[in-house]
Amino acid sequence: MTIEEAPHDGHELHIHAGGQGFWIGRMAAILGMDVHLCGPFGGEAGRILVDLMTRENVTVHPVETACENGSYVHDRRGGARTVVVEVPPPALTRHETDDLFSTSLATALAADIAILGGPHCDHAVPTEVYRRLCADLTALAIPVVADLSGSALTAALSGGVTVLKVSHEDLIEDGRAQSDDIDELVTTMHRLHEEGAETVIVSRAGDPAIALCEGEVWEVETPPVQIVDHHGAGDSMTAGFAAAFSTGKSLLEALRLGAAAGAVNVTRRGLATGHSLAVTRMTEKIQVRRMQGVRN
Image (cartoon, rainbow, N blue to C red; front, side, top):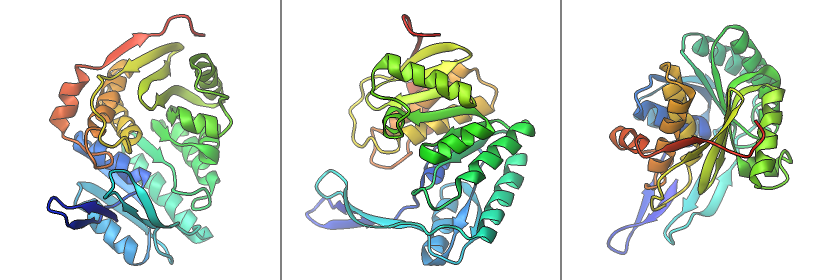
């Protein structure tokens, strides 16, 4: 729930579905993908979420839980996000975890590509789920795109992923990179590749993203658009990359679509939103070039 300032000195209350999996899924649906989302849903918040997600052209495969979904209230009347209250999601029980794994596996087996997003907090979903799911889908030849950090990232790598997208802030916070120095980040990307990611994409906030694809390091630069809200740009990038990759586009074409989706997102206030036509036309403005003077 978000409190916004109304045009005529009043207030507006907006209720939206949230969570990284949904944000990625929403942008993927905007870009024309047939999106199926698996996740735990329970209580009043869970019932509302399923309805809201369905309205965004996302097919939901809910795993029923005994407890409420997580939620938050943000106040944006001052222009920036101010947290009023956050209710974290509870940890899944053993049976709920088994149901989530089975539902995710069955849904992914009917898909062209599987996208994994992280939970809102580390305790909600056992990290072992990520390792097992990545290992099984890799063995079954289903491409896996993972947008993760922390222990979930480590677990997914041990199972193996086709594409890993991660922000440079998360790499530093997780202790995988010591700074945002480009050589340091490239070295970290090679380590992530050695741990189990075929392709690694690192978003760098306002700086060009970098990608390690087939042994080459690439820089992905977007036009200097005016930023309204940067939240959701990384999720949009993941969705755009997956949308292109799933249809057989090259890695470089997928990088362009991902960067374009992220660039369009920051021009709006909604997380992982935008118009497909704007994303398509923005793709023409994305520059992807091989980086010089770095370890390859």
